[in-house]
Length: 362
Image 1: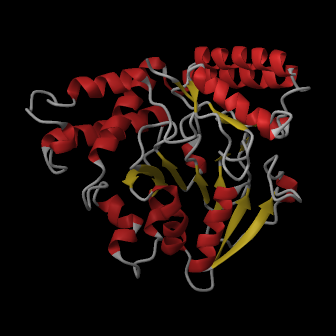
Image 2 (image 1 turned 135 degrees about the vertical axis):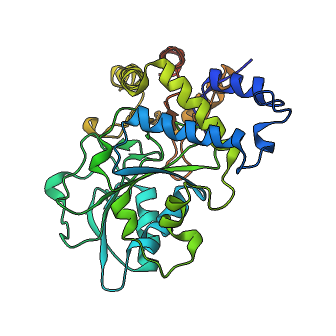
């Protein structure tokens, strides 16, 4: 029996995507071997590679000005690789601070070159309950890029309106809300996202990059770290994580059959409204700290009256077939991750459990 998976990542995958992998695992399209055994230079894998790019392009509406890259090292590597490529001596980049991951990105940039905090929403207790407002920005019009983290898994905040940054290239770490809804890709010079939340398993990072921005990258760093190297070779400069990309293909196919990103957004908003509606209705027992206009549709964070009740909630939910609800170790509390593979029925099961738990323990 499969459990309901609310893990923050690696997260649950759509059952049809897993079933397709199960059917093809030992013999991919009559080739006599698994896709993970095929050469990344062979025609069998190449077809998967190109289909994955095609599905991403179709679902996101990626314009000809941009290109899809498959990279490794996760978002954490991009925290360092991004400034390595674009920060030259005497130049600076702006960072919008919204949580732990934007802090980590900023810290890596400082090791490479000049970086500055252009806005922050950190609270006196060093936690975050909202994203910065536009009137709080102090942007450098000469910055080489402005970096943001679109969704914050630890504190449960999310950008719902993209910031205005003028002519400066906008860069976004979308690891935890990539493809939860349609997005105007043309607004961004560089989008990167670890696949293990909304799109596939761990092991591959998907980037959508503006071609002219990539062309600005430094050439005095090792080739393997240059984005232009991977762009010029269609992400085949070295052996890519072929199985992870194949599974992303399966998830993208599922998303297309579901109706694309418009339908995914409708489904995701329904889930968020179900859960936050319950939290607001039972606010005497559950505390949701994030300001309403910054609430994440991907990671809902909340607290019970005591840490002991938090633990009891997680244990009882696990016995009821729901896993992954324990909050991040530095934040505590409860975190329900509502990524694309989580269904509205899964959330209905959770909120029914929450109502019963509050009735018994309130």
